[in-house]
Image (cartoon, rainbow, N blue to C red; front, side, top):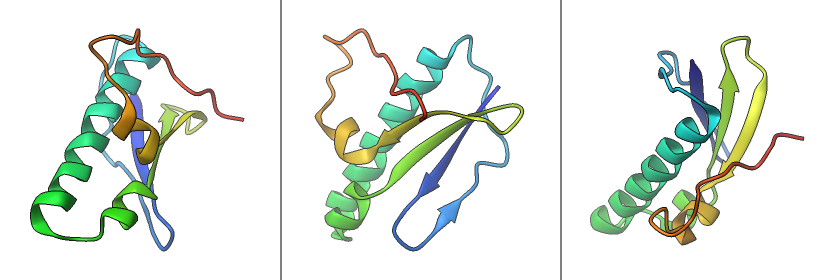
Length: 91
C-alpha cells in the first residue's frame, strides 16, 4: 500500500485511500501518469500551469514513511514508454 500526497507552495493534500501496488516502481509510474493528467487539466482549463508544475507527489508507505518524491515538472518530461520507470528515493 502506497499513498501519493500532493504538496504545493501553499497546501498539502493527503491521499486518504492510498493504492495497492505490487512495488514502489508501480506506485511511481502511477504517480507520473497522475501528475501528467493534472498538468494536462491545468492546460485544458486555463488554470496556472506554473502552479501545477510546482507541485510534488510525496509517496509514503503504510507506516507513513516517505519513500519517494516526484516533482510534477520532472513527471511532465518523462516518457514512460522508453524509460524503465524508477523512482527518486526520499532523502
